Image (cartoon, rainbow, N blue to C red; front, side, top):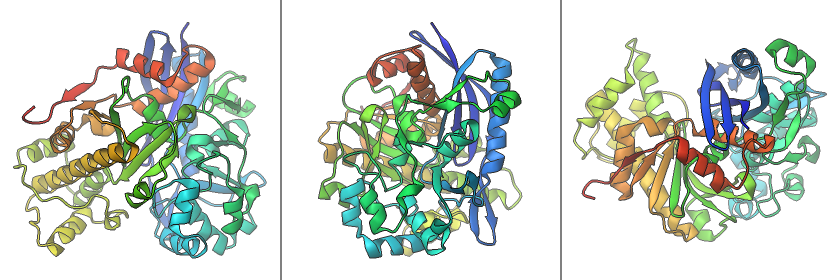
Length: 473
């Protein structure tokens, strides 16, 4: 038996709707819609246009139902931490973007009540200034939490629009900082300490559970059957990507590489040591109760924001040509700290990188090819360091690295990560997030069965990775 499902995959720069065919020996994807997604700046800050994003989702689902009238279910994944506040089912303004400058004040507010070391013991999360609890502290000070009666993370909001049901999917809830890392339940005591109302947070559902069926007007708009369920998947896109990372044997580390590079290993339980805290590693929820023990690296944002800066001068930059030119640059380009918060916000990335290097008396790239190579080298070093740390902190013997997502198409990045880590890199699948979304839907429908390892075996049998061997090996 095979099943056709729709995977809604929303990223921080673009979104897609894909149709997946899944069965015991079948795993196929077809993209039916792709649409842009990005921030909008208004006088009060940087926001997402989620109403427009939802309209794109409906259009994509309409295309999916026209392509295959037998769509059995829908799954939604997206980036983490961002949310909408609602009252009486109505969204209170356009949600803020996690790169908005307000988050710095949120850090001050939270840490005045709860030092980071105590937070880490409760939620297991690395320090990131945009985590949801910091954003909610700013909302609290502005009085918004006195008005709102519900908070929904982005994929949960999209599920609400489709079904009318309000839930919090577990893997994404784990990124808020308000989930107890041990019990995997909302941490009511921490909410009280931070003066965040407990009633904002809906019940938690696990990947594979049905959230509800599509509303009648959604069925009419999209052409889907009225009993089509929306099934919870690993709604944090990294959780779905790791489901589809073909780590069929022990020793695999992963890098889910897109706007961000999520670098780590999978563990059965959280790693909450002081050493892990000092290394700024995070313990996020994975599918089937696994833990995603990882470190966030700035990722391809550094390169894409650099290209945007160049293109503001009016000249189109061809990425393939730029990377070919970068590959011809010698390996001895300087390396900057890809994790430095100075690179977080949108803006003139080439100028920031040049300033960072100059302040440390390091050579500043003289050409665009050199700048691109400098970014690739810095990312590869950050990836290699994070893989090494993930293995040491989790007491795992890492023998290879799996790179999935858009970064798996960047041959220079894959090769230099292999060279700098001394480990072979297995690149692909590029659509790991959507594949993981499809796999969990397929298992919920009974089209496939078994553990994560069996699902990954299906990925390994249907998608052949490219292998990059370290130089000299």
